[in-house]
Amino acid sequence: MNVCIVGTGYVGLVSAACFAEMGNDVVCVDVNPHIVEMLNKGYVHIFEPGLEELVARNARDGRLRFTTDLAEGLADALCVFVTVGTPSKPDGSCDLIYVHQVAAQIGQAMTSYKIVIDKSTVPVGTADQVREIIAQELRKRGLDLPFDVVSNPEFLKEGDAVNDFMKPDRVIVGTDSERAAKHLEALYAPYARSREKLIMMGVKSAEMTKYAANCMLATKISFINEIANICEMVGADVREVRMGIGSDHRIGYHFIYPGVGYGGSCFPKDVKALINTAKEYGYKPRLIESVDLVNSRQKLMLSNKIKNYFADQGGVKGRTLAMWGLAFKANTDDMREAPSIDIIRDLTAEGMRIRAFDPVAGDKARETFKDNPLVEIFDEQYGALENADALAVVTEWNQFRNPNFTRMKRFLRAPIVFDGRNLYSPSFMSSEGFAYFSIGRRP
Ligand code: UGA
Image 1 (tube, protein in one colour):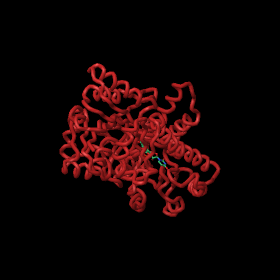
Image 2: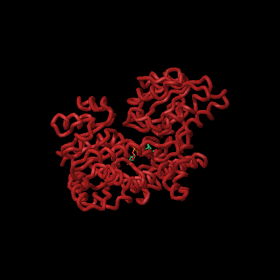
Image 3: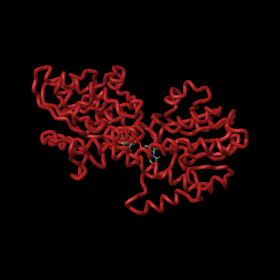
Image 4: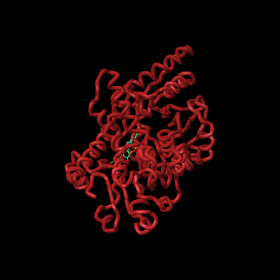
């Protein structure tokens, strides 16, 4: 099938590469000529395991091309995926300017039947707006070309995106058009091998499904973070509690790990956007608002522990903290809404110095903290520990799970570890002579 993907961010590029991998002919369109030039040379601007090989192979075999020209991308395409950015406005609502622009350009350039597919996460009602914008542009051209607008939200996770796309839990297709449904069924058949994985529904339900899924997952995280905080107070251990509740299959063991709060480009944005949508309809979504509030508080739990620890020793001012992990989670270089940002801001505001290391997010972190003279980013895991008063672990990279504890003690000024991801066993840490603080567990 001929596919056009507009926007080469995470969702766009992963979708493009994975569609091409199954033999489809894919043209990717992006307004940024630099990105297009790099992609045409096989260089991928996103850190995502497995993506570069996939892009390079399919580009070499001629199934994947990149251009800045939307009309060229549209020419032979039956399916046109809109995967442009949907940033947040200051009030938390979703800014649809790029989606609307692409819709207008499609209406201005199309010359035959197209299935226009919203794959970016967009508020309920966006497909109707896209339909109206395209129709308006066609009217201006005096044309009455047929087209359908479909909602097909993406559920990939950064760091495991290719796998999520190739072997999805489900593919959601929201459309009222039988013609569009038939083509999308064919396009997705190789991925959603078992029939139940392809879930067809109305357009608005599909748009809502994406927000409901992310808000549900964010709720699980804020829930377990809240339980972890209470565990600490009452002297319970959240690891044991998680095992206990997870054994009820209605609750499950997955995606219910406490930590430093959720970050990234999706949960924080989508939770806020759904709150905003509900409010637009005059409804105050109390549970989802609380999920957001609990998360903001959780992001500062680790820095509060650090401040409390040093409170009776003159505070954190003039002290140095080593930090392992800056990305919002492991296996990505993404710093968007990363808890490390809040933690560093909170501690440097009180005069603490930070020596941080991340296996891949170093460059992005240098950019993020370029105006903060108290932050230094190191390229070496143990080098960051030198002369630091304590270590904070903020991202759960595998290389932090089994470190050389003797070396850590040699570099650190004092053997103190604040662990925001519960990577180590409290009893082991204490036997190694560390003062150890984690989330929701007895020290
Ligand atoms: C998330 C969803 O998991 C995807 O299904 C969805 O498609 C995507 O958003 C999106 O809307 O595009 P992602 O943001 O890449 O994916 O990352 P997750 O792996 O979901 O992690 C989100 C945050 O939750 C991270 O900060 C992570 O550290 C945190 N988390 C996750 C926890 O604190 N505890 C957990 O048990 C799991």
